[in-house]
Length: 420
Image (cartoon, rainbow, N blue to C red):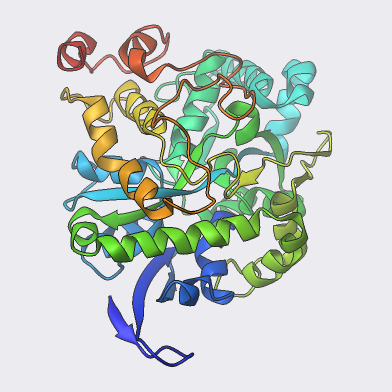
């Protein structure tokens, strides 16, 4: 972080470098920079476009970035020392909710229709039943299982896809192949036939549909309404040294998120994001998820979902501890971590509700009465949680124990002894 001249004269602007991936949900950083929300709070955001989440992780850790657009599980993984992480990362705010979708190739979509047309056309959680039927058919015939792409091992995309498959009886570690593909490359990877489907953030699902190569069979808001997706990631030590700056950064991005949630601003947002230094996809394609217009492709219905991606409303910027705890359960469920730790304590260390509350205190930004909530139960409005279930962060290990498909490596009794 360095100081630069204020274009309005007077005090210096504090320069903050930020990394992002070309996705619709990088919008708060882009809009804050383009429309001057950063300068209104005494900052100058310097944005750097990256192609992969591994690049984001590495450059934030070594200090090449002061902050970054990050997958919600990434700061948790960093605190746990997973995935080559060495520097503790925290999230003082969330940048968005929802935004992902599961897309399949035309050949897989045709096979889904053949095996279970009703589930396929229903979409959402039901569509996984059709995928399960295809998987079992291929197993019986001795054929290769389908291959699905996701963007990073410690990502909601990985956990969303795995949960969706498991709900239909498909074990992602044994019944299908999962591979990592960076978001900007995933639609072309589907086009080339190297994967049969993927879970990624918009606009790359809509790009695959526009190219005539994919069909969107489930959106994140159909799996878990108002669910976690991207956060602002900063190094823990940097945040401690720059607490006032972090507060100004949070206020900057909250202002950008509020602007983005205004329907009248979405066309302008799409135009700005379409520029090659940002997302670099046609504005009309970007406008779809921003405005809630969903073109699924294939025989899937076209519909409207105002929650395809949410930037501010409904406490979207609040870093819920319950979101963090659920993400930890998925790391345990899929064998990414086996050594017991205190889930609640880690949630409090990583998802910094104290920094968020401090930043927006005294403003008109609404704050929830608590730092955690039961998921799938109305917080601001009713929402689905993977087919109608609920998640109580106070009973996270009981929830894990009840899941039929999970990695057997974690000793849940040992975890329970630490989390009693």
